[in-house]
Length: 453
Image (cartoon, rainbow, N blue to C red; front, side):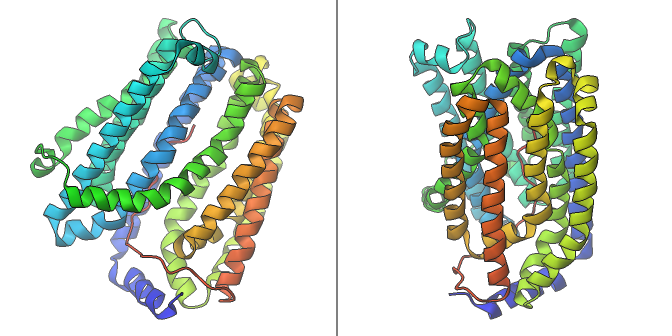
């Protein structure tokens, strides 16, 4: 059962005991992340222009597989470390390092397992999975290597995050994002940018960033040590409940691309990936919103003022979102022809649907979703399952008929459905009209480690 006194205590500690400089640090980190991701976004657009629709579709599809795998099993490990790490580092450093090392070795094992699967999968299945291309085996190995690289980099970024070492966090992130941008520019200038080279730079640059980050870690963290049995068991016990929900969330966000690849052509995938790359721009703003308003949710709910906070947010978010939508829907055709090429003009209507689905999440859902994750995670898992089922059934029906437009229609309707459910439930919780699940709370630092497309 929900305990308002407990949340009241959490709210007091968040608002009274955390120095104001912490919030300025968090804003600085968020601004840095958005700048770096924004630079990578521009490099992605350049890749689409050079590769063309088909080549960009191959690259984007492989990238989607990497994000699907890391989202399913990497995110629960990140949450397991963030759940206890910040407090342990301040009160029991040896135990905190046991936690970090245990999560690291789990990541290594999972990444190695993905590599083995890429080697062991029958060639016929690999060929079908990777567009029937002659270089399908190389694409498969690079995709698997990208999964392992992401796992390794997350392990060190996670330590810097829980240790509040923001300067080092941004330095490593700069090597990661900046290194990829430099590689893209170099390959374009040399005339060597292909789907394979694009995927290679995406997969390999995390290893370079990890190597730099390793030397920035304190000596006691770098010291080789086996995983601690108790911490391994604790992480696995916590993660097993998270994997199902996060796996469904990852599939919910990526299933449209996979179904499009299965039912249609690589051209359809390329058009969809291009539209999606532009449509996620509002998510940059969503990251700022979560960073600034995230710490206010628990105190507002404890004071019975969450619905008031949501109304205040909507007061500014709705007109801002409406202006963005008006501009985006008006100039999107020109944007695709100018910044991509005439070949991508077919992505215009797909973009219109996808950007509306992104704006729904950015304008209406951020605070209700954060509240639900905070006090009713099991319900969020159920709602995600509903969305996943909707995308699966709708995708099977509409994607074979309408291609990329059908995939965008399915995603827009799914966002409306799931977003509406979350908003209604969060409003009821804000009025204390429903029973809330009791969940353990831990002080966490925002800062999602997965970059945008």
